[in-house]
Length: 173
Image (cartoon, rainbow, N blue to C red; front, side, top):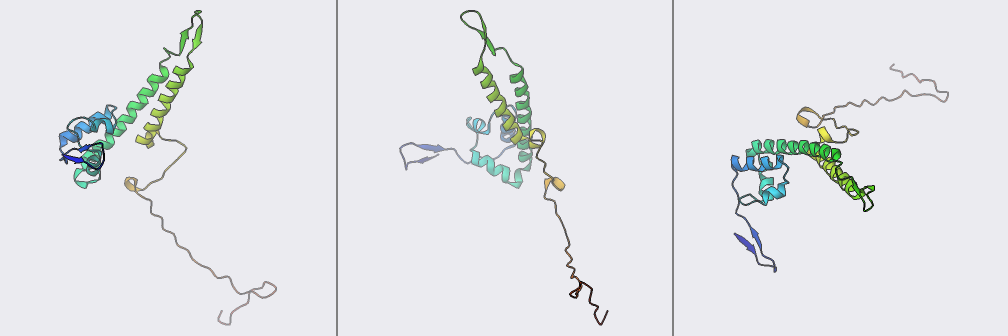
């Protein structure tokens, strides 16, 4: 293990991890179950984030890239389910005060609103086609590629005209 001795805190870095299908599946399964990538990689035996990013960029690990994309879409679906659960749970929205009067618990409602907004935002980033802003539309070509546009411009020269605006005929014409 490498240790950074340039400052007072020691920073320990793990060994360079080799990709295995089991490791990729473990990472993707945990993400699909709701864990953040940071939390997954904090577990013992997991690679660094930079190593996972390298795997995602490497053409040799295209299956992992596909699993990772599916895991993130599954996470977006899980967040959508949580939004409904939070919105439907009104159990702590009111309470009885010391006099037995029912009072609205504005703090609980505000916290639920924050939880819903955070999940909506994240779901829209994880699966923009499914949970993104419907007002924005992106057109794309084959396999989400760019659309190629070809256009031709033809310059037309207007005929010569005299002072009255009449067309002057060429001698050839």
